[in-house]
Length: 397
Image (cartoon, rainbow, N blue to C red; front, top):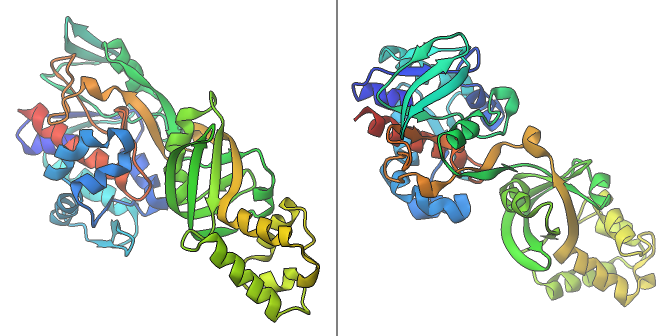
């Protein structure tokens, strides 16, 4: 995006790519479908997805947000569609088609593309970059430079933190990178017994030594190591920030729309109407069997009992678990399992209106190399499109 906008604005542009081909992360996004962006929100609402750093993006998103990105791709010949949840995909559901139109525009605008080109050194004189030296010995000089290397997530796609090291060498402060949009490992083993089971609409709360840090609502999926799913991925940014120095506890409310008393009364009614059946058979009508068994093991009650044999304490503990199942997070799946990077170049050292460095006079930033990470659902790609758009235009001036 940065190369396209700079070239459209009349600049001679060189795009340096470490990989043998362009757009590896685009092809991985959205499970190969490419979740381009997310619609239906005001710029302020959209920027809530980036947590405490979201305000940095409001001006840029207002200028080039989801609507403008969709129009941009449509003009290039790519048809898109929006799902009911706001996520936007190419009409073909194929990320290759997104990459094709972007590459076509690069070629049309005569951008010089150097693939399989690894940077050995970025040279500077005082507070200005003078040249870039490639490993093959080639030296590239330019008026302005845009750093768009990403963070450390998806290292197999080329994001191995190189840009963070270069930015640090150039004098920028780096906020320690953490995995974001990453599944979580738990101390408790009961999630493993529920492997493959998912719940579409639950509320999860993150506690740090009892203090509420964050809350998310959406889908949770149980795995052999712990928990995943959109709601978990969206809260993982805050989890990674407090681990391993603090205790990270997740509380899951499986029925966020219903009160404790309402659920208790509903279960009591079901048990009363089916008194001759076991609790296991009754609960099988309202929840997965393995889930019910895991709950009863946790509350030390016999699921094969008939309702009349279950104590008042068992019923209360059953509902208590449904409204607040506790899990202790031990670690994340790391950058290898992460979709995004939290941390990066300190935003205080970047002009939010131009993406220009406040330290190096001819350096601009775009994408995840900056301390920006959003929720799952197209937010991270839109951040990249937006900052690339701004950086490309401003650097070409």
